[in-house]
Image (cartoon, rainbow, N blue to C red):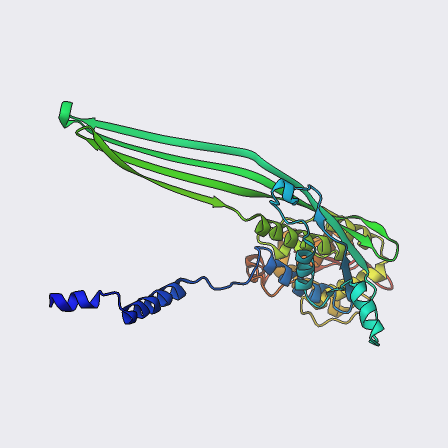
Amino acid sequence: MLALALLGGCATTQNALDDATKLMAERDAEKLLPVTNLSPYSMALGRFGSMLDVYKDGDPIIYMQTRSILDATNLSSPLAGAEIPGDITEMVRTAVNRIGARVVYVPYHPDYLVAQAQLGAKFGVTMPDFLITGALTEFDRAISGAGRVNSAGIEFGGGNGKLTLGADVKRSAIFSALALDLNLVSFSTQQMVPRIQSSNVVKVLNFSSEDNASLGFYGDAFGFKMEGKYLQGRHSAIRTLVDLSVLELVGKATNTPYWRCIPGGMPDPVVIENMRAAYTGLTPELKLGLIQVMLRKYGEPVQVTQKYDEATKTALQKVYSERFADKGEVDVMQWSGFEPLFFNVPMSWEPRSANANANANAATAIVPVSGAAQPAAKAGT
């Protein structure tokens, strides 16, 4: 038996092949597979595309193009350690293209087009509506940091029988900051679109831990040490910045409530102010037409007649009773009354609100004002 055991452990060719096969199988089982490179806001961009399908139904497609989005801090230079990427244009293109069919990215590769034209290729050229410009504008290392150390030691006995126990626990965390600025330029005028920009910052964590323990007796001691370190990827943090910034930029440009695509998102005052100004400037007939368009987005079977007809009155009563009963009596011809109707169109990823279910049977009074078009429609409970 001993001879067989020794023979089984011999350095033979077959044993080496068996060991190599086993090792390869073990390592293949532990191999990390590729995963989709998605930031926390990648899903929000897809949702935003669905939102545009609802809010911009029938509107023309928006064509986008970017200039080179580079690092303005110069910390991407090899002389500075190349800590961040020097060109994030491709990340911006990916984010724009993720939105969907309502926003189309137009590549700009003149050298390629010229080369193809010389070979006889014929193609049309799509001119963009907007250009995205910007840069990585901040990278502040170690803007905040803290560390803690806990130590404990115990001694037993004395003389040659002395026993010593010790332990140390160390933790430290350091935050750095990365910022990205994007602006929107009208291609036809080559002017920046006022107030349509995004400027966002993300904190990057550098965390380290260290644990020590020791045991000593009779004057001799031994111990062990464990260290750990976590450094949040800066490229990953920048992709998160890009996705959020593109969402904000295009959301402002289209005057849509893009913040609803983000869990816990806050309303954007720029979009609200733009819509308030646009709605206030409409004639009563156009306001009624817009109200009817929005009611259709809630699934109400109304026609866009720009008149306060019975179908419009019934639809307003139903929608405001089910969804906005807490608003009381409102005048939908005023922005304060129309605002909830505009910004709360149901989206596929949102559950039906508890408020809508609770007030489904609430009574709503519609008080029209006399006139040819009967423009001043009121809804309330």
